Image (cartoon, rainbow, N blue to C red; front, side, top):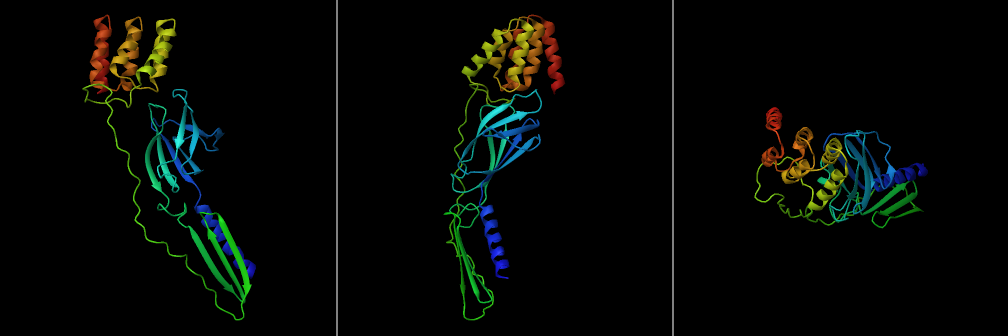
Length: 295
């Protein structure tokens, strides 16, 4: 009988320890594309989905993640997963978005702590339990922060009914939510306040590298194909798109690329500048018809 109660105590404490383990990170694809994921080079066993959940992560840690899209239409993504919203003070549940126009970082949407700051990750710092079974007294104590557990058994002179002591009362503290970072407004196009087509246009240096790849293509059709491949995962301002179109030799290719690029332009209300690229008025007419069908 004593062994039964001893097993019960061990199972109870093991459950408490399990609850104190790691953070959870949920990653969702903004473009609704199915993907699998690897963490620090280890492929997760989950099937492809638009959302993947990673458990057992260390709060305050950093992990290299590789996002492998099923569809070849989307470029695979390598990023650093940072779990520092709670300052390493306790585990929590993270919700990240993989942006459609990926710019080297995941977007943190929400963070929910699993326990108040100042306590163990599972909400229990210290636990003590006394049980009397027949003439045998068992005492078990555990400190989850220090990772220590002790257990003792002794004989008592008289039979006492089983008793259990409650965990020591923790002092009442006021839990303050993590300070929100100050949002700094970044101006990508001076004086522009119109409709935004995509987020965070590429930097000037990155755009120059993109243009170098397009210029390396030998023929006009090849330049258009390379430009489309780049645009799938990048956001441009209209000035950059015009420079890209001018690299294409003929109206037909310019028109095809201009249509494709529409959904990847930051300052949409400046899109009219594209019309100045074409050599023939018929290209302007065809672009007009395309834009009318968009709305």
